[in-house]
Length: 382
Image (cartoon, rainbow, N blue to C red):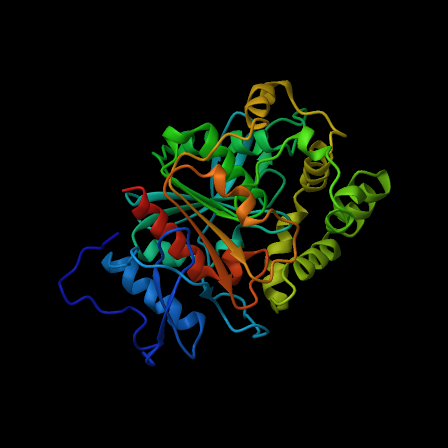
């Protein structure tokens, strides 16, 4: 997308990150890629290149690809300097959803969805990049996180995938978002995939970390190989009363452990962690999180209102809109292999491996790569 201005647009970060003769690289994909500029500054030069291409609309999608690179592994990633403004709120049939917004009100909408045990700051550095490129960015707290609240005490604290997707659709309706690009990571990626397959006429394009993540209770009942089962240890822990009590008692310590194991080479600082983990203090967080994992194993009932949606999702319908999937080269979380979900994408599609020690929380660890994927998915949609 372009922004208004004269023909000699200046790089807004030119004085901060002067060019240092970067080596051209290509973002990975099934078919075509986008040129990235990577040099001694790592992610800094990539971000500068992203802004130039996003603001001028000059990104290229015509050449074969190799893995993208992000920040050098092991480098301390400080708390992002970007700050969301005051949260906004909107009511749906079930929730009062708190959300952050960035970018022009008339920009093309982008709905970004976080996962567990993270929060909206997964997109703390993505949002200003997209806002600078002219997008209207909406980042809600999921049910059970941050300032989002249930309207009725009697409402089930339901974490099943259809419930989260219904929240997102109702948010889109309440805000009048017309065919947003949807992107997500972890729970947010699953929710974005659900929106893409069930409401393709209402979603412009998809960006999903770790690909096609839609599940079903039947699929969840199928045993995996022992090594794969071990990576889901917390799912089985949460299936027990001891696990529920343990998570309620040690929520922050549990989140820190997941952050470290899912992103073993991400050396986040303490302010970054504390800023996000505060979202888990939501009074509904523990029951929603426990229900999410118990529902997957068939140990908790869903709500009848979502039965038809779950029946459709259990057939694993294809993604028929343009999509970009991303994977970090150091993702320590359980995830499907890219080749196993390739056939689920039947429209314009690219898969990109982001190198440089990037783990599970990819948008926060490699914001430039994620933001570029949004821009490119928009372009793929025509």
